[in-house]
Length: 169
Image (tube, rainbow, N blue to C red; front, side, top):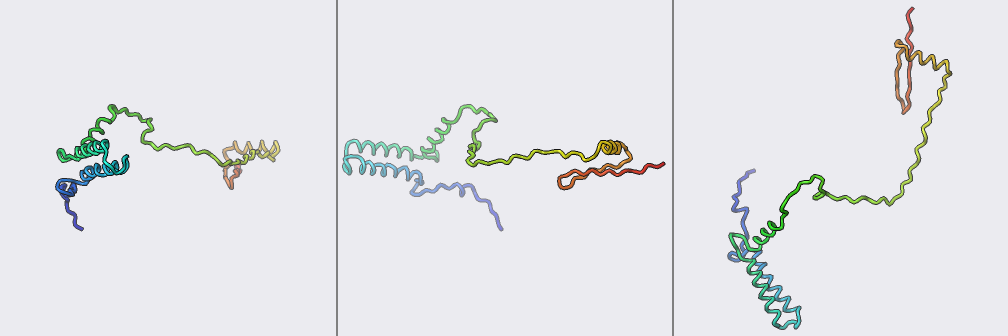
């Protein structure tokens, strides 16, 4: 597949509809015609010329005509928009990492459903079934380094395996 560089003049073409007028200028020049027609048709006396309608139509023609003038390749409307954006910008920028500007605001969800929680059963310890003498013997075996002591877990239970080593002698 071939790729070619496109010149900047081709990508930034401004559509000229009639002569040097582009679409925005034509819309600005058509606005006084539409507003004059609405004033003529809606304001009393309806569909008749009166002394207050004519100055309003003339003022709209002058304003929209002035906004459609091109200066240095841009129309006056765009120049005014640039100046307004400059004048209305914040004068100082204070960085605050804790600011919530630009972050999504999440509202806390109201819990409407009532969830009944079952109480956890109390954990009970199993009582040892060994007698005092057997318990003492087991403790001696655990302390003896010659015995092999192994802990295993199966199905949530702890199993202890003690293998007694035979003593020589």
